Image 1 (cartoon, rainbow, N blue to C red):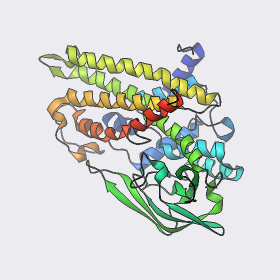
Image 2: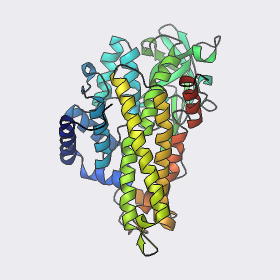
Image 3: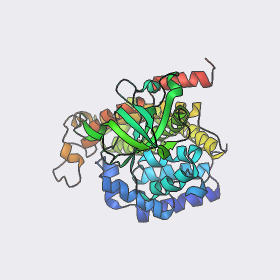
Image 4: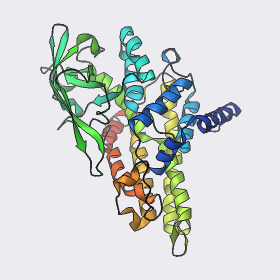
Length: 398
């Protein structure tokens, strides 16, 4: 693979940069670069801007609203969006469910659900994890029993990110208890407004309502909302997870975080000199930058595999492990750079409109919160320990 951009790719990069300069709302850019909280309206606004341009579903086939971009163009777009301060698109509909429907859904499902993902009519959330069934996802206990033209769903999902905004949830449910765990799972699309569904917030240590518990009590789901075949949901779940892991790796956000770290290290003083001149700190910055450059190559390989009709396999697990480790190290260095000023946590300072003077460097307000929040990245989407097992099986045959 040639890792040098061609003149055509450089021209595309310039086009993306110009688009971001003209269309990325300044207030959203300010929030993203400042580590401030985004509202539902912020996320929906950027989603709509990209959809209007036709650049939203750049990893979908062109016939379903994709862009027809090459692997390198997709990579360029992600990097430039992150460096410009654009928010990441909420992935549940676009990057998780969309590819599953395109590969395994029937024509009726594709024609109904895919346009609604693009135009923002549906906000999807993910119903995978349960209490006691996280990394061991196949042990899930939520059941769906067929009764005529409906499934009756009972059970509980947890860690449902942004479920408080969602009107739809894609769920793994158990439809057969008599076979081995992986063979009795189905993939259902469920309207969150159906009677019997209750969403309860899980408030995190930083006071944020990011995740939820979702309870299902005798919830009726039309049979036509079954994706693919009954009891084949594990296959679809694994396919979805390869996309989720690639998304979690986040080469673009890590590149933006590294740029923020470099600027911070130039501003912050240590022993009368910029922190970037401290040999130990500079060595850690150099090490993580080298690792990020290596990960860029793996990211391109994964994108190229999908472009060629393949499925990201062990590479997506490798990317998830290294991507999360790199992101966590960069955030750790940012926290270290601001020093004791990272200790005070003023929740209001992470919201738009806060007018008090910052404590220490402006980057200090979100440094600790971002560091602690992103410890989860090595757990969700399949813990990094599970990813190592996948790699050992797929590559080493162990």
